[in-house]
Image 1: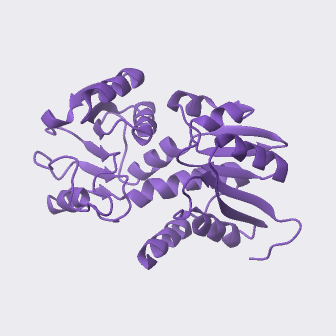
Image 2: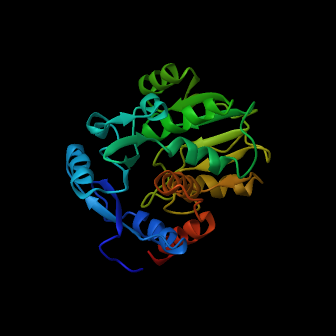
Length: 272
């Protein structure tokens, strides 16, 4: 990758970001398409600094991650309807000095699920009530799925269900009978507690699609248990890659090299 005075700068803003797989993935994509661009990781304590950096450095675009996805909205020139409804921005595009905020998490999750079939008319149970769950739930409803939120904290779960216009079930009494798609949008099962599962797979049938947003480990205990029952599964790298694909396409107007981006992420995870 050659860097010169014409190289366009992109990056990810968050804290911490030293673990980010974004630089490896996006730089591989820029290189594959012959684009004179570079993507770096920037650890910042406040969202305002991210917007100021983009303006001062004339950055082409940026990813936004924890803890700035909500706070950054106040410092942008425009926020699209999807990001405003979700209440978070994970993507910024610099259009001639105007900073435009979007959210590709919902689209990324939907494209990941749709590698296994359609969502419209399906009964979907979504575990979690945080930011990821909000984005995924929004996407499910936009695609015509019938959504039920399940969460350990009933207060938070009911609040998200009310905001989205979805059903709610306490996690402790969750019934998976008849569920077409089950999604874990919590951190349960992530390293180091890799043996943990957010819910028992009792009641699942081989026709139930199971997705886990956790990607470390790549095959969580939930996915392993679901696979043992014959269920099709979608691992956590799929949503991560597809949300980045949507970002790349917003920034460049070019079709992203999806297979290369996924391969780069898997290689990075394996090397760790």
